[in-house]
Length: 446
Image (cartoon, rainbow, N blue to C red; front, top):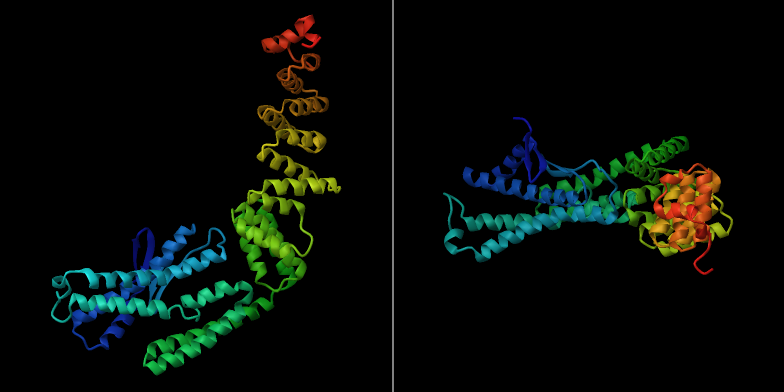
C-alpha cells in the first residue's frame, strides 16, 4: 500500500500508509468491536486532518502554498516560503492548528446540545452517535490544549521559538527539553504512557538536533558569511528581493561579525521594503538606530510607511549638510512628486540636472506643468534646452510661459526652438503666432 495522495480544499494532501498501521494499533487496544474501532480510527484521522487544515488555511492567508502530510505519528503542514513571514504571521499560522481542533470540538459540543435526541441515540451494533460526538469533543479539546505545551516540535514549542526569535534557538530548545521531561513525568503519573514517551523524547531529540545545528554553524567561516552577503546584494540588485531576504535571515542566525550583522540588517531592510514587509523594514531601522543610518534607507522606510513629510525633511537635510550623492537628490525628487510638490521637485531637478537622465528630467517638467506649477516647469525645460539644444525642450518652456501669460518669455523660447531646428510650420497656431506677429513681443501690460 503506497502513499495516498489527494487534494482537499485546494491543498495537496499525502497520507502515509504507516498512519493506518499506527491508528490500528491505537484502537485495537480498546477491545471494542471492529466497527467501533474503525470509527475510532476515523475520529483520529479527521481530528489530525482538521488540525493541519487550520495551519494550511492560515499559511495560505499569509500568501504561501502549503501541503499537508499525515504520517505515522500525526500530521505536518509545510511550504516553501515565497516571501519572508513576520513573527506575528508565524504565530498566527501556528495557533491556527489548535484553533481548528477547538473549532471541531465546539462543533461536536453544539451537536450534542442541539441535535434531536432521536439522532443522538442512533447507533450501529456497538456505539451511538452521541458517543462518537463525545469522543470527537474529548479528543480535540484535550489534544488542542496538550499540543500547546511549550515542547518542540509541537505547536506550543513552535510558539515559544517564534516568540523568542531565531537568535535564541538554544534557549528555545533548552526550555523545550525541560518542559518535555516535566510533561513526560506528569503524563506518566496520569497513566498516559504514550503521551509521556512522545513529549519526553521530543523535547530531548529537539535539543540534540539544535546542538548539532549549532556545532555545524560554528564551523562556518567569516568568508562564507561574506559570500552570502555579496550574493544577497547581487540578488537585491537583480530584483530578487525574496532571495536577498532569505540570505540575510540566514546570516542573522550565523556567527557573523558586528559589521557583517549590520550590513545584513541594512540589506534586509531594503529587501523588506521591496517585498512589502514594511514592519520588518522599520524594525531593522530600530535595530540599526544606535549607529549611523544611510539617509536613503531612512527616507525609504519613512516613505514606505506613508510619512512623506519626514522623508522629504530627511533628504533635504542631508543635501543641506553636503551629501552630494545623486541618489539622495533623485530620491528627494521622487518623494516630492509623490507628495504633490511639483514645483519643488522641478527646482531640485534643475539643480542636479547634470546627474539626472534626460527623460526623467522631462517627466518632472511635465508633471510640474500638469500639476499647475508652470514657472518651475518652464525654468527646468529651458535648463534642459541649454544642455541638449533639443528644440522640444524650448517648445515645452514656451508652452509653460504662455500658460503664465508671459508672452515675452514664451516668444523668446519659441525663437530659440526655431533657431535650434524646430520647423515653424509644425508649431501649433498659438506658438506660431508668437514669432509671426510682431506685437507678440509686447506683454499684455504694455
